[in-house]
Amino acid sequence: MKTLIVITGLFLASGTVYAQEDLMDALDTDNDDRISLEEASSDAALSSVFAELDINKDGYLTASELEN
Image (tube, rainbow, N blue to C red):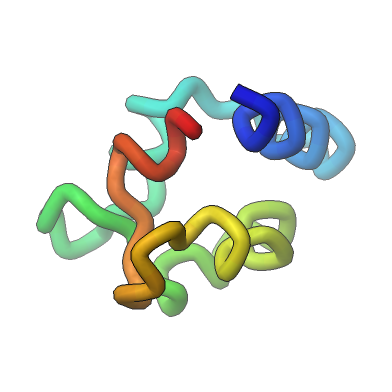
């Protein structure tokens, strides 16, 4: 939950507001239900916290990682 608050704050600060599902839809360009660092690079706010959100350190963000 704390992470979601941080993400929300960063998105609001960047002028980009996404719901979790919208974030996946907007950034998951290869439709594999996860966001790679390359896909996340199109959003500066998400890129800046990508490593922190990637809990299992596999190089991808899943919906469950975005919920934490």
